[in-house]
Image (cartoon, rainbow, N blue to C red; front, side, top):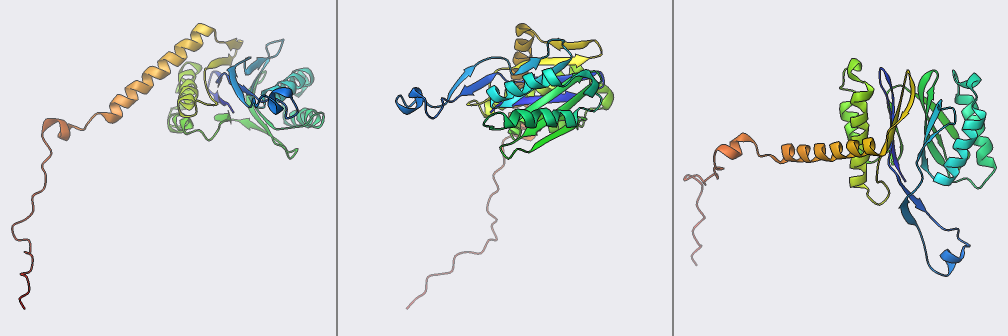
Length: 256
């Protein structure tokens, strides 16, 4: 599982991912059969992959090993002649990769720099592949995580002219950081990139750290605001309603 966010702004596209990966030994492996070793989690290789020419960026979710093989095939076969209308070619590449191995499914967010565009690719174990162009925002991985609320709440209410890379990076980072708070077993860490008219820009370790720190700080500020008591509770004590004097009294005990 992972958490990835892609957002389309007026001046570029933002792609943010967590970094936590997991691995499971093969069922026939010595580690699995004799040592009882199951799923392990670790901060492994980047889930954001960039083509050698810097023109395509892909965020990989679900089975990272299979997704990596798929991304490598995309980099090799999705040549520039397909970039204006890449959906059918992406499906072809995916299905060819799917049939070459025991498939467990994958999900990818794909950014093309020419023309600047964002696509969501999803494929499952039933050999079905869906590719869609994203006009606003999309998630890959733990897409039902409650932290997606931040995107639902604030992206659409943001005026289109304010949807810049500078504004969208903190919003996407908030989704990923809080997703890790809510599902820390499978989501953690953060890495980001963005693409604008000048090309792809991969954020440094320090810049990613600043995004995380700012998101954590906003979380504390939101907590303080939500838990702050309203003015009527601060200015005076709560008045406890008293029973009215004309309330009916208990009936007298019956006499025998």
